[in-house]
Image (cartoon, rainbow, N blue to C red; front, side, top):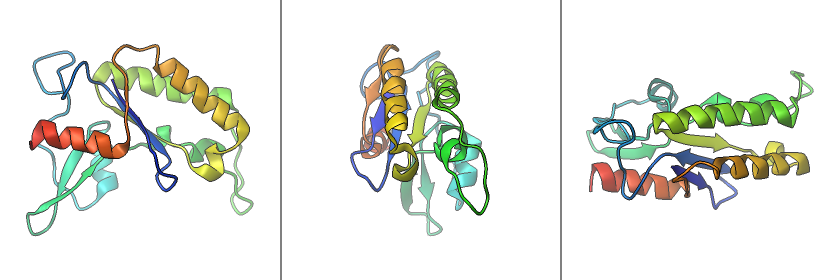
Length: 165
């Protein structure tokens, strides 16, 4: 499994996915872990939503290689469940609710062999109870075989080695 916790405060996210060995193995068939060819898109969010849990490279308008995107989804973002605003009040969900969502998403993404790219914003997930939630989630993920915790850069570099190297 492929997992990463960002090592920079500017990118507070964890990337988790699946591999059984290096560089990128198969999971349920002889097909590569991450699909190929990769789509082109000028809109990362629309491409992310189409592909779901698989990294891919953008192609720039001039045909040059763009960045490798590690897609995310709102279900793996702490803000929708825990960010409160006076201007648009909404409930702050308990840790048990958030942890349940994150665990269900991880189980299924693990089964698919995809990338689990979780986002914790410092102003949201930096609370003491949310840090405890993150500890519990990491302990849960570690119960699955072949989990790799890596930075986003390491995930992108592994993808480049597997598909462009």
